[in-house]
Length: 103
Image (cartoon, rainbow, N blue to C red; front, side, top):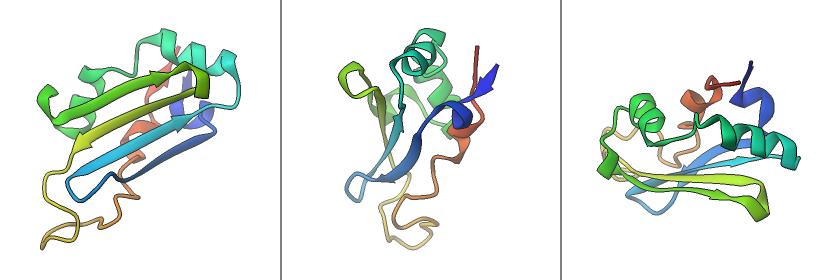
């Protein structure tokens, strides 16, 4: 088994406007991308558990076969830059994805 961090070429998060965060998971080979996709580990339940969300807080979870990538967009708890926001740019939020184990 490998972690998603070990398999992904790019694993990042960023704002998708002031009210959403987006995660990009990109791979440099079709074989690795297909392995992750077929594992079924990247799904609504996993994202909800990792980020303490309900399913309706996930805006998009899309596999882009042509780009060998996965895009996940979730609603932010509070808007970017609001008092109490710990990550104005959303650039630190991908860490929980790193340790997902892929068969």
